[in-house]
Image (cartoon, rainbow, N blue to C red):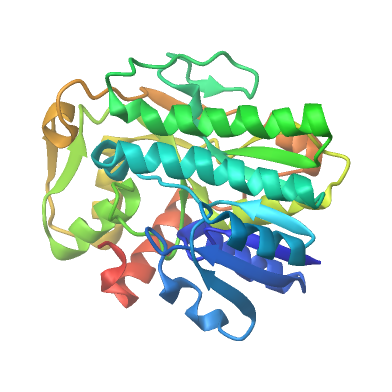
Length: 323
């Protein structure tokens, strides 16, 4: 198979490229390096075909889609800090970029996986989210919700292509995915905490720290992406991908301090001080994995401590990861 990975120089995208190569696929990468880094795939030089450009460039997307059998569309503007700081870029890249990829994939009848996010569930007070749950969004005055809404539009558009044109496709809602190569540049919590702990700096926890999250290892997630794409009978469906092991953010900071042997202290920062007035967050975010487990037998194997140790080791070897 020949596979195109948009956003292939990003954290998850680069691991996906490695997995596709392990499965003996020929891999093409499209990435504008706005949030991805070429160093993430530099070790794959000669084994992947890389194009440095944007999914907004329809001619480039068309040329690449023609050459492949399947498309993994991961390219997006993401990260809480970046979304808050650059809402126009977030909305344009996420919606127009996805529209371009879907239009060209439909033109050539290529199977597409579109990466969405657990953010689409909004600010519901549920603790565990199922794919068919209702969504509760904040006010459009708060740019914080622009990422969630832009990815929801991506989902609507992808499913519309399936229903109207029978274009083979699947949508995945990625919950917090973590592992080596992830940076803390745009607010990703674990690399940000690990960097501070390794430097002995205060670990800044936004809010009261009692919010809970689940963290999945990238090495568990990317085989699931491939598994869904290889199951050609699965079309027009949405799947959560993540882990179900929950932890409060305050406890996460303490766990990282313990694992690094750091002398860092935890500092609690109000949301409005971190992101500006009116910022809203989800209190809990855990996935139901019933649907993907039934579809492909997905069962994440990597514990949170193992995930944290992998990030710590990676950042010790590559201190530039965090920023």
